[in-house]
Each structure stands twice: as structure tokens, then as C-alpha cells.
Amino acid sequence: MHISKKSCIFAAEKLQNEKNINNPVYHKTMTKEQLIDIFKQRFPGDGMQVYAAPGRINLIGEHTDYNGGFVFPGAVEQGMLAAIRPNGTSTVRAYAVDLNDEAQWDVNDPNGPKATHFRFVYGVSRELIERGVAVQGFDTVFSGNVPLGAGMSSSAALESCFAFGLNDLFAEGEGLSRWDMAYAGQATEHKYIGCNCGIMDQFASCFGQEGKLMRLDCNSGEFEYFPFHPKGYRLVLVNSCVKHELAGSPYNDRRRSCENVAAAIQKLHPERTIKTLRDCTWEDLQEVKSVCSAEDIQRATFVLGEKDRVLAVCDALVRDDYEEVGKQMYLTHAGLSKDYEVSCEELDFLNDFAKECGVTGSRIMGGGFGGCTINLVRNDLYQSFVEKVTAAFEKRYGHKPQVIDVVISDGARRLEAK
Ligand code: GAF
Figure 1 (cartoon, rainbow, N blue to C red):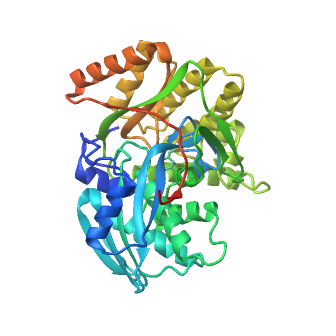
Figure 2 (figure 1 turned 90 degrees about the horizontal axis):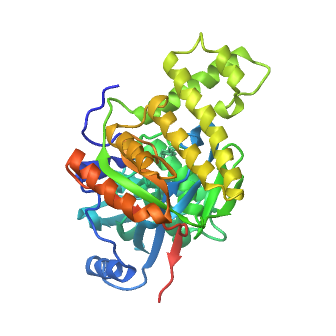
Figure 3 (figure 1 turned 120 degrees about the vertical axis):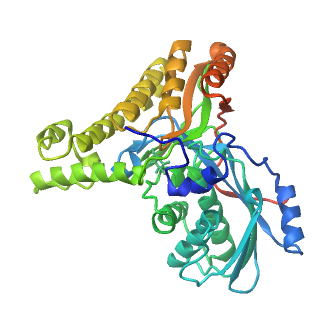
């Protein structure tokens, strides 16, 4: 598979890679007070509210969300902050601090702004209106510290921040549920950005709770919080700081492959209801081997395996069996690399290197094609692993990876005045 080392694959993350590939943190973490100061310089007066929503990690369960499978994410401490104040008109005036970019549009404009970062805000407000929230004009200033292009879903953070904030400011009565907000974010990706993503990222950003991972059944929407305080281990991300571009839209292509296989199985079994690969078995897959492309079968093979791996990891966590958790993570990486083909040289290098160092579990996290690996590391190995992987990666690729300690945090919220 030929991969050109250029920019981002997901339209949703386009902005990030236009800006910077090898130095993903090009802006600083901003406090609520700093954001308010910037807001006041642009839009004098008081009365603004500040909202926050996080990016996410995912312990296991990749590319399973749009296949009706299980995912196992948690919210992180990095996220998006937005100061918002209704302005009594139908005009939205927005300023993206990190990009030093501004735009304005009418809430009823059917086209909206062109720049990706503003399209998220525009799309979310349109989706809220569709869901019955009477969004009017507002002034806003926003800034984020989710490393861009790392696969930690800076886009879901932006969507959830505005979904939560605009619902809080404009909804009458009870307003939207967190599920409605998550779906509004996902619909924004589909309709305004062009990425047919699943629900994992928006779900994690809306429902996250400090210290807890969540196992979500994407078929039924049922989910369970799993307190995650592994004794003797920690989770650390190693961000390759690269994002590769494939011709076309590979994320949407992967999704289409899965849908092709599910449709072929449905055709063969009209007596059953096959909505997604979730409804399919290994036997079904065998049966359609001759009518589907080898590539589609390969993709589906990964998805069926990944469905089982999430459940295996949950069982292992209940037993505090972190060795088993790690084993499943390595299997996921192998599947994502060989069958789903969403890895790249840098991520395979990080994965191999983690294994050589004796790291318990390691794998690509997020959509793939760059970004980071998530690593389950024994405390006693942590320091030497971080030092070694940093040095080895830099020697090979000419730049340092970014090491990010995972802190599982809360989901979308309003920040109360201190
Ligand atoms: C991206 C998507 F946005 C998610 O919905 C999910 O499919 C993920 O890739 C892969 O697990 O983050």
C-alpha cells in the first residue's frame, strides 16, 4: 500500500495538518480567565459563559463503532474551551484563538463558513436547530489543547463544546440530552465535514467521567462506566507527530468495505436482519468470501476479531489481569496494521519498539494513518521506556515523538465562575 507522507486523511482533521505536521502542539493550554480576557478584548462587556469539552483515548475497540460493535473510550484532560455570549442578532461572530482566525455568518445561512474550524461550530449550531434548539446569533472565542493530528479527537472536543454550550444558552426547558449532543456532533462530521465517522468520539467527549473508562455497545447505545486505576501500570500515549495521506478518503473507504460485506451476508440470508457486521459471524464471513473482494473480507476479519477483543479486555480488567489486556492490545495493532491497513511505518516502529522494551500492551489509537500509539506500561518500566522510545524514534525519523500521560477526565461541561 502506498502512503504519501503529506497531510491528514480525515477531512475532520484537515485543519490540523494544514497547520503543522511535526509539531502538533502549536498553541498553549489556555485558562478560562485568559480566554475571557481575549473574549472581552474582541467583544466588550460581561455575561459570557465558558464551556469545556475533552478529547478522548480509547483502550481498545477501533473501527468498531460504525460496525455496531463495542468501544472502550475515556475522556482526557486535554480539550476545547469556548467563551460564548448570545448577541441578540442572528449573526455569529467567531474567533479561533489558536489559528488567529475570525469569521462571521448568519445562523440561517444554508452554506455557512468555509474554514474547517468554523464549519464545526456552524454545523453543530445547525444540528441543534434541527433538534429544536432555537439557536440565535452569538459571539464566541475558542481555543484547544488536544494535540492536533494525534488521533485524540480534537474535532469531537470542538463539536461537544459547542453542542453543550449552545444547548445551555439557547434551549428552553430541559433541552437536549447528552446523547442528542453527541449525535449532533456526529451529524456535523457527516454533513458539514465529509467524514462518515462513528459515534465513539462524540460519545466519549459528552459522557466522560474522571477516572472512568466507558464500554459502549454501539448497537444498542447501552454503556457502562469502568473505574480505571490500574495498580502498577499507567497509560501513556506516544505521538508520532505525523499524519499520512492516502488518495481519496480512506476512513470512508474502510467503512464502505464493512458495509459491503454486511450487505452480501444480508443478501445470502434474507431471513435475518443484518444491519452491520455486529450481526455477522465468522461462518457468515466464510460464506461470502467468494462474492466479496479480498480486501473487503480482510477489513471485516479485523472488525469481527476486534469485537471479541473488547469483551476479552473488559473481562480481563475485572480480574485485574493487565497482561491479558496488553496481549489484546498487541493483537489489535497487528489487525489494524495487516488487515485494516490503517497503520504506517512510524506507528509500526513504535509498536515494535514498545514490545522490545517489554511494554505490556501497545497499539495504534484512533482512526490511524499516523497519530499516536496507546501504551499500557508497568510503573517500573515507564521512565526507561519513555527515554528509550524518544531517543530511538528521533534517531530514526529526525524528530522527537510527543509523550502524553493519560489522565481520564470529565466530559462536556460549563465552567462555573470562580
Ligand atoms: C475516528 C472516528 F471518528 C471514530 O468514530 C472511530 O471510528 C475511530 O476513528 C476509529 O475507532 O476517531
